[in-house]
Amino acid sequence: MKQPQAITAILQQLLEQCQPLYSQGKVADYIPALAKVAPDNAAIAVATIDGQIHTAGAADKNFSLQSVSKIFGLVMAMNRIGDDLWQRVNMEPSGQPFNSIVQVEWEKGIPRNPVINAGAILVADVLVSHYSASKSAFLTFIRRLVGEENIYADQQVYLSELEHGNRNAALAYLMKSFGNIEAEVPDVLAHYFHQCATAINCRQLATSLLFLANRGVQPHSNEQICSRRDAHRVNAILSTSGMYDQSGEFAFKVGLPAKSGVGGAIVAIVPQFGVITAWSPALNSFGNSVVGMQLISLFAEELGLSLF
Ligand code: DON
Image 1 (tube, helix red, strand yellow):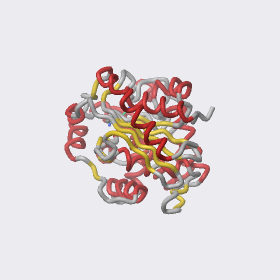
Image 2 (image 1 turned 90 degrees about the horizontal axis):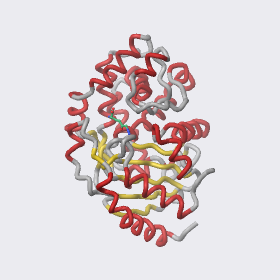
Image 3 (image 1 turned 30 degrees about the vertical axis):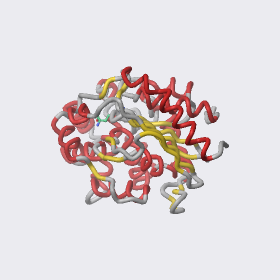
C-alpha cells in the first residue's frame, strides 16, 4: 500500500484533475433547500482501519447526507429485528430510478432492496416502531461511530423535504395499503426525512463507516457495531444496489460496495483497508455525483482497489 504522504498527494492531484467536471452535473432541486448549494465544491477523504485519515478539498464542509443515511438506518434495523427484516424487504437490484413507485405496486408492497426510497422508508418504519425516539437514536448512532458530537439534522433541509415529499408519501401509503408499514405514515416519513437531512462532512462520514471495512468492528473504539455476517450483507447490497441504476457500471469501473446521495456524497467501502468518501453536489441523471464518481473511480484505479 502507498505511504500516507503519497495518498494525500494523489487525492490533491485527483481533485485538481476533476475540477473541469463541475459544470457537467446539476445540483438536486426537487428538494428546494438542496438547490442552494454551489456546484463548484468538492472534497475527498480516505479513512483507513489502521487510524489514518487523508483528505483533499473541502473535507470539513458539511453537506446533506441524504440517501447515504440509508446505510446507518439499515444497520440499526438489522441490529434491532434481525432476519425478520428480510420478510419485509428484498435484497435484489431494482433496475428502476431510486424513487420509483410502480415496482412497489407490482411486488405487493415489498421493496426490492433497503437502499431505494421505498426500502429505506420501510426501514424507517422499523426504527419508528422499535425506538421510543428514533430520530435522536439515529443521530446518537452516527455520533458514536464518528466519536464527535457535532452532527445534527439540518432543519431547513428537513422542513423542505417534509413540504416536498409527496412521492415518498405515496410510496409509504402504498406499502401501508399492503400491510407492510406498521406505524403511522406521517411518523415514518418524519423519521426518514430527518435522517436524510443529517449534516456531516467527508472526514466524519469516512470515519463513521470504517466498521463495514473491518467485519463489523469500529477500529478506533474496538466496538462491535454489527455482526461480521451483517457487515458482509450490507456490503453485498451496496455492491448490487448502492449506486441505483448505475450500480452495474460502478461495479464494472470501480469494483467496490458504494452508496450515493442526492446531496452529492458517495461512500465506497474497501474491505480490510478503509472507506473513501467523496462529495461534490452536481449530479448526473441517475442522481449520483459526477465529480464524486470520477474521484473515487480514479483513486480506486490508482491504488488497484477493485474487489473483482
Ligand atoms: O427521499 C429522497 O428523495 C431524498 N431524501 C433522498 C434521495 C437520495 O439521496 C437518492 N440518492 N441518490
